[in-house]
Length: 181
Image (cartoon, rainbow, N blue to C red; front, side):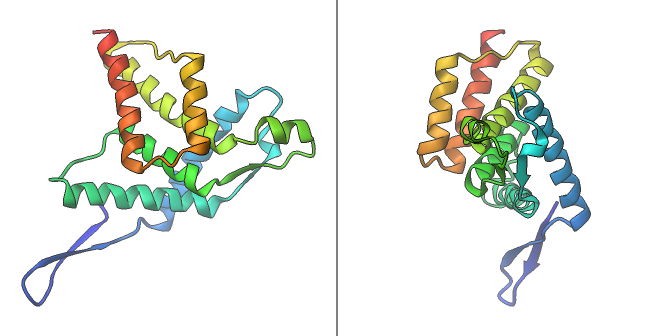
């Protein structure tokens, strides 16, 4: 937990954010890079060597997610974030910071994967839903091609808030969870 609570001179509680230590951030970044490498491995013609990654931006992704966890605890009646909300927040900050860039000398690959941050954000959300539904009720997560195209379009062109993205992810998860009950 990263919240620092203090009592000020008026006797009121104030909060100050305490960032995770560098080892924790490093571990989070490495874990996300492992997921990214798994994603890249599923892409036809793309290798990890074709990608430039801004690792300080990835560390900032986790700082922002950690801050939002604290925000929910403090300002939303000690609400804890579940794995779906957390995945949506990670996806949100990847969409904002765009830490991945295809730098392949092949112009076809650069064009084909020009939306790598958007596609990886979708992958993160879908993966978390897939794991959750498999663990909870053994359901298979399947999304239509049309929906996938819509969400990719939204991630590229719409201004989606953190809260809206968390709701989208939880709604997808809920629909998968209730289909199989």
